[in-house]
Amino acid sequence: MKEEIANIQSDALTAIETAAGEQQLEEVRIAFLGKKGRLTAASAGMKELSKEEKPAMGQLLNSARAVITKSLETKDRLLQEKADAASVEGLDLSLPGIPLHQGNLHPLTQIKDQAIKVLRRLGFSLAEGPEIETEFHCFDALNTPPEHPARNEKDTFYFDSGKLLRTHTSTVQVRTMENQAPPVRVIAPGSCYRRDEVDKTHLPAFNQLEGLYVDRDVQIGDLKGALEFFYRSMFGEETKVRFRPHFFPFTEPSFEIDALLQLKGEKPQWIEVAGCGMVDPAVFEKICTARGDDLYDPAKVTGYAFGMGLDRLAMIQWGIKYIRLLIEIDARFLSQFA
Image (cartoon, rainbow, N blue to C red; front, side, top):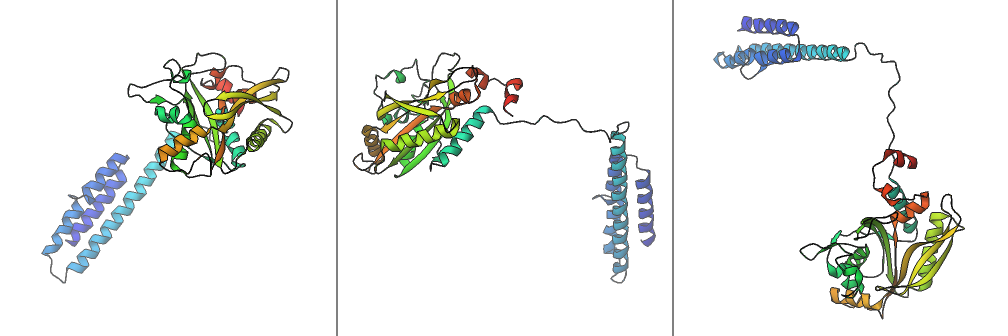
């Protein structure tokens, strides 16, 4: 058996030396070390040896296996080095590499991150909600009457199930109040959908950021101070902001906000940038009904809400004339925001 082991080792080393590729080397490994390999078969003969012979033969078998295994690893490394050298043959590795184009954040992502950063300084936290919503969360809870134009199929995308694509992220505010006791101070950025005609400033799918603050004794002055701080942080400390009376079903009183801004290549002008107001008591009453308690009793809490279009903020920030540029994958356009 000793001679047999020596012959197996010699034959294995010869086969390894003559192997011309990785596949041949693998075949050699299987032929000698595999389950049905020669060395494995020789190991099976150990059971026929006497107790005195087994230790010496076992040591020879282990030694042969170690020598063959090391030879296989060495040959495999040599074959890999040879393949690597062949793959770069004729190439000048000292030449500089081809520079890769460095990507950048989309302008909508940049403006969203900037807005969130400012509002976090005011104590707001992020909240999320589904884009497919119920009429209750999108309209009923927000004091929107059944005959309101926004509920018409010409304005809102409805599913056969009766659900709809949210038309604003105020739905997140409703869900937050349903699941969280006051005080609440959240912002909800996200996609919204309306059946708008496509033009320079409108698309059926757009991006909004809405905020809600509910606590005891929240005043209009809190709303005004927060939004003035926000727009001056976004557009400069000297930015002038004005509040115009308006109407929204879910706030009373309600305002539209204008900022005096100078767009690229134009004279300074007042531009509408957001809507806001004090949360209507009727909204709090609906939340109390949905929750089954009085934590949002309008006699106990007050609050303000606001909403703005992120697409519009981006267009103002960088003087973008056409909103469609924000959804078209045009590298020439997007590379300007690196």
